[in-house]
Length: 509
Ligand SMILES: Cc1cc2nc3c(=O)[nH]c(=O)nc-3n(C[C@H](O)[C@H](O)[C@H](O)COP(=O)(O)OP(=O)(O)OC[C@H]3O[C@@H](n4cnc5c(N)ncnc54)[C@H](O)[C@@H]3O)c2cc1C
Image 1 (spheres, rainbow, N blue to C red):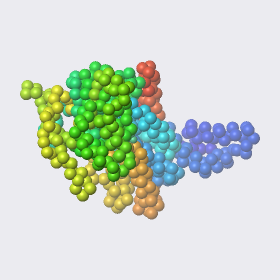
Image 2 (image 1 turned 90 degrees about the horizontal axis):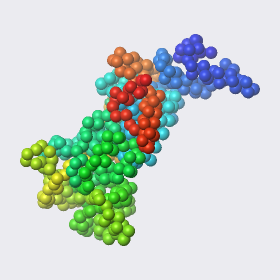
Image 3 (image 1 turned 45 degrees about the vertical axis):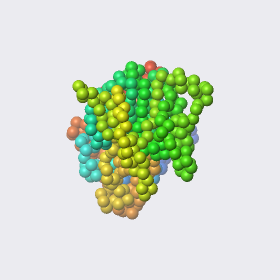
Image 4 (image 1 turned 180 degrees about the horizontal axis):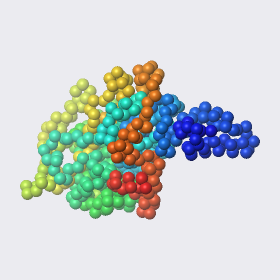
């Protein structure tokens, strides 16, 4: 008996375990022996064994099946890998991730008080633990290893590294202290290592959020949520401490268009309406003519706008009125307004307010356009948190996976492909599409899989030469276990490690 990878010597522990399990079946009267072991191998355990063997650290093998690598371990990376390994049992996928921890924005973007959204991590974990899938964290593609080197090592490379640049608003004063991109602010409270120095100034009474999508509403909710709610989530301890001291009592969520165009979803709006110790304070003038205008809009949009209308204009029942009267914090959507200038105090570089233009909406070729019609007075004594507005991402030009001649063997999925739009479910669908395109291209021969490729074997030796030690999935599980036990001690689901150094220390212990 031998390990396919190690040769005739029985050095692979996994092979030995499988062999032992064949023999022990014999003890129960089954016709099993070395022959049965090879039957096991024929029944695709062969490929599993090889992959597990690779994980045991001895990397001298070639299975001959197609080898694909995915760059980025967010939802796109995992859903693409999942589809590929389900579609073809001899296919191996390696996922390379820049950070030592997986899951992208599911870990660093999704709001801490939305734990149910993070359940997708269970599915991603199953994929990562599949014997035909390997995770290599702490590998920054473009720095530690180039895309060209990946293309040499694999039959196909799928780029799924998300969309993470900030978009400038082009408004004077947007670089001032006190203006934060939503990416950084969200990364700060969610423990993204590169955002831990942000330490936002929460000593003001009013915060303005530019943008009215779900991320804007997430930020508003986190700024206004009672600490007793937040402390039971996986929000980081420094963020929790800063929010406990926060003086922010009023959050304005500003959008250039009107209530019918608001970009958040009804679930997020309902959460705001019900947020303890807060009351809504909208402007009735923002809703003029809206009741008539929603008659013909599609049902989901109608329901969302009706909830906005109700929250803004309806007199609440006695109980709700009492709750609102007692509330110490307030939130509101401000519609038809665009930022014009961030204002400062004459004697300082800190922000003092924001000047907004008041817009009129015009509909042209079924697209809504805003035209400024007046300057509103400045919202003063605020700090400004630009929101989704600043989520512009890279690259602007998506690669087209269905035109492989464009870059043979190079594909992309997720937010890298679509830009920063849609939820995890939409990312899943577009990732499955990319995986399907690759499978078709393999079948048609457009992607040549006839010659064996070295896959992670060659990349790992390059990384070793460059002094990069990858974090494999079982290393991540060590981090996970430290985080969950630290969280348990504080009555929360996890306490995230906040620096790459600490993550690596735990992973490589
Ligand atoms: C603040 C926020 C909150 C959200 N909340 C929700 C929600 O509640 N529900 C919902 O359904 N959707 C939510 N979304 C949307 C959801 O997060 C996205 O649809 C999804 O994460 C996009 O997946 P992705 O894999 O394309 O990108 P990402 O999740 O960004 O993953 C990209 C991965 O690539 C890695 N990477 C980057 N560069 C490199 C490199 N050079 N080398 C190797 N790896 C690299 C990154 O570290 C990251 O792990 C939210 C988005 C944001 C921004």
